[in-house]
Image (cartoon, rainbow, N blue to C red; front, side, top):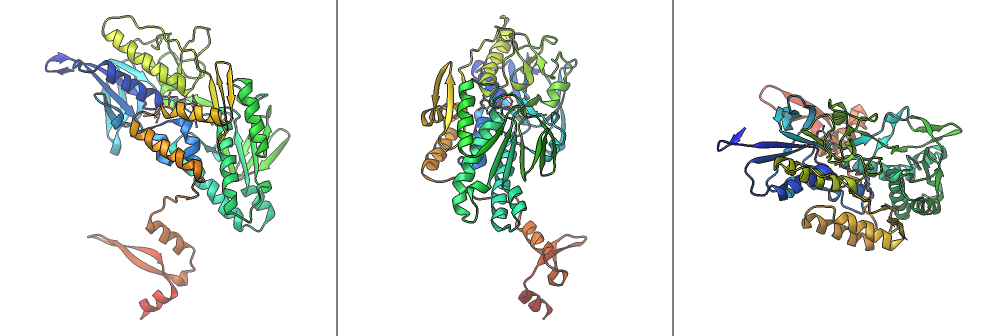
Length: 468
Ligand SMILES: Cc1cc2nc3c(=O)[nH]c(=O)nc-3n(C[C@H](O)[C@H](O)[C@H](O)COP(=O)(O)OP(=O)(O)OC[C@H]3O[C@@H](n4cnc5c(N)ncnc54)[C@H](O)[C@@H]3O)c2cc1C
């Protein structure tokens, strides 16, 4: 490939989550003004999600879109393409993508940075397909709608057993995602129940299942103790050392018992992204791409990997954890190392000493462990928020988030349930609920060849007018 007959080096970043976007922005800074290198970022969506903000997007503390940011405005010289990566051919150095509208594209590269992240582990528990996941913006929207819907349904339900099922919420997994999610849900339900005078807080049951002996196994015991205290105060039943043995529609089973619940959310850990774990480079037992300390695949010199899909050695012989704070640092380091390689310099080993960990539990409750320095309550909650606010690129997005947070200090979370149905869908739904005698066919839309008849609702008066 050439530009004005100059050879051009092509870098493809596969995956535009927090790792991929941070790498792209770092390339933007490092390659400013260079005509001999082209960088292309490919992501399934035209936005990226800052996952630690998903919980508040679900409860409505944060406007749903504000936990995400459109990718294009974040980039200057790096190009962006929306597309689903199907395969990375590391021998021919080609990334195969299905672009918008189904166009199949083959993108050749000199270096590829794989930042495809991970997915919820749905293989660990039989029947996981009957539970919701909590990973994407759509997951947050669906769970939010579901929670509000169950409050509405419980409000009119007269059968006690059914009402109990509607008001039972189960989260499977006591790691950071499960604990923070349950924290946000308990705070949300407690706050919104005041609008449902027929429902009592003691009727709502929250269950959390964790296979290990304590909550938050990846964090300091201080965080786990704090989370346990807050969740217990809010009435949650915390089942530690309790592996869930199976999920059925509306039912969770463990060795000693079972619980019926209309809400079952799965957070039992992650598996590497399917495309990354199919890429024919050296991978570990879990399917993560094994890199050296400089973030380069140990088997293919043109392949680099970061974030949740990579197994990156840390100096203590372990691997860096799958966390956003690590993905961000790895992303900056990989961009520096690829540029060093292009400039004939040696890539530098990646080293990051974690700042600590944080867990938010909704409604101004959080705990922070900053390298052994412990804080909890409002100040910890404020530190976590401020930290993630600055992980979001661009001041415009930060301003919107800060405004949402400010408003949420004085107002309760919004109860609006967004039904993604068009007016026509709503009419069809209403018609479906009517007896046949009250349905009239309405021609929509008219095409050159035929008229499609759709059944629509009609009031008896309208029918009378029609008959006339
Ligand atoms: C709900 C939740 C809360 C979290 N909270 C925290 C927290 O508080 N603190 C913390 O440190 N970490 C947290 N994490 C973990 C953190 O989000 C991840 O460690 C981090 O996002 C990893 O970054 P990544 O770039 O490797 O992957 P991701 O951010 O997951 O990005 C992967 C990207 O690849 C894209 N992609 C995947 N497959 C394809 C394909 N075939 N084609 C094209 N694009 C594709 C995805 O759409 C996505 O944009 C949380 C995770 C979740 C799910």
